[in-house]
Image 1 (spheres, each protein chain N blue to C red):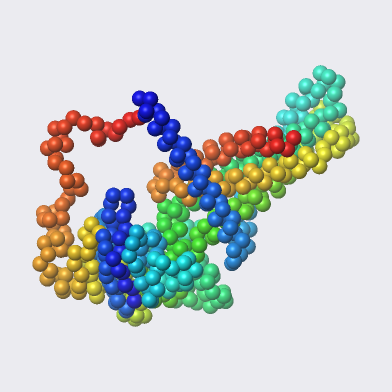
Image 2: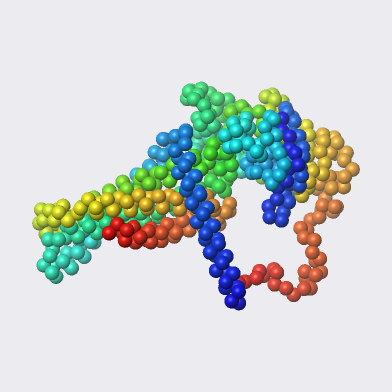
Length: 270
Length: 257
């Protein structure tokens, strides 16, 4: 379905993706795991075509998104749905209008049919009856479910989830996890999940990719990842502060930083 | 020290030129895409309602009191020369040429410009632009273009409304309160105001309308994705627009005279 080849993306001196290659297979749930700053959100933005990589390719349905023009990209986007970390609901529209939005923009479906479609999608995420509310009246977990309803309203082939469970309580996390799995098994939707939530990822994933500072350090099924001997993978899964993945972000010597008398920290004034 | 100074001047000039360039490209894209299919009339009408019709009350009050105070001041000055008959034309000309377009634009900047910058900044902060892109909708076309067009359409209309209310405010004070003959007030006005005066006012208000929505949209769109970023964008949009209105007003007046 989606093939990423030698993707490189840098922001200034930071390498967010370092020659990443992977396959996101059809009808499967692929979870991209990594700590903050590991490049997983960057990878998602390249895969969806929201940002252009420095080099490398992303093939979606056989088309290279990194070289496609806007029109072709937008045509492919109609087959994609995305759940954003902050839900990205339109705050000036009601829940109903938020979900109906893509239908109204891209189709000429009659109003009464739109109403039925929206009701069905809301029922799928368990929020029927909230149509008339504004996004600000919902909790974070409910907003994510509305965002999910909006993402599936055009019946996409692929759904991208950016940190779908971050900031949610355990029950909401479970509900979102179940929804992702259900959409995948019942409708056959290919799912790509970016997450750092190991427990819920293991429950839903068919395949796991672990990123560490722009590199893929492991990929495989849940069992393969759990049995991995790679020290970084073991540390990441255990959530251990001790190990090859360093907690501090700088390579400079701590003692030097304390002893040298320079004005790096105060910032140089003009 | 001196080199630091030079570097500072160079850096600020560069960043200023960059911002000007970016905002120019931004405006070009927004206008260009406004004329691409599909046209979204309802979006445009909604923005005209927001920038235009919701500003009616504030413009009404500003215009009324501007006209009233002009008549009051004008009457006392003109009576010194025994020329109170000219009050009507004095009020009308100051309002139509200068005060109408400028004050109206300043009021709309405070009310709508700040709101537009904040709205777009928050849309950016909450990922609504990539969300639109993921739904295969061009964000600049969907969000920015209608606002720019609505600014250009609304301001001349609001200014015309301002002019009428301002002249009536002058009438209230000059004729009803201070007792100038009502025929004299309007008679002198009709002979003094030429088409060129009205034309100049319309040109100004068109430019101010563009300026308000352009700066507000650009500031919101280029805001940093933080709460401080949004508040900075809002403030900056009001300050930059207000000052630009005054500068552009001078330039336009010198060109039109």
